[in-house]
Image 1 (cartoon, rainbow, N blue to C red):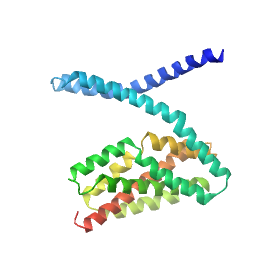
Image 2: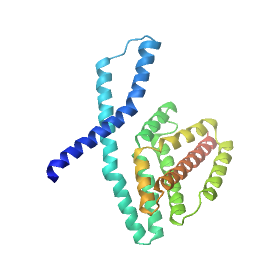
Image 3: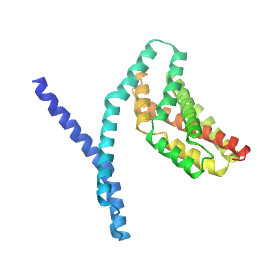
Image 4: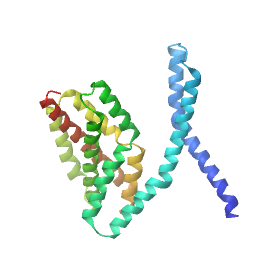
Length: 240
């Protein structure tokens, strides 16, 4: 009986994921089709390629979302729980730093943004340097956010100073890097980061893991903005 029920449950789960993805993709797809065909009244370029690309996007999202749910988030929660049981705060902070840095490198949105930044700046700001700055900011923010959860501290004493630093650096940074810093912060809140940070919050024994998990994301985003602004100020002083 268990063997008979297992495929049924898997099929039900797949259909649930497909319906969820359809609800996410279809509105955007229908909006683009409406404006291209009805508002602008222009033909669709290379229709078969568009259909094939849409299929790849849907299949890729399905695989990514399902994979993160069954591997990355529970694995991150398991490792975090083991470190908590070890009662080794420095080791946990080192883990948070390394996790924040490494998971940022895997975010598809950041990879795309880094490539565009390199192209738009004609190589003045390479994707490697930009990605390193963003990943460093996320790592620092992740460590600070983890400290807050470990010791059960309120968010205000952390968020207000970080926001003050951001506002101060915004005044000195070149305008083009100011906008880029905030865009980079948005690019770091992707599926990999969200899944793993929620796993950390759950492993720390917080009943409100959603709140604490996104608290880590907030600190990671602020760390990203600070890091990119500092990079922009430095490059501005160097005439880049």
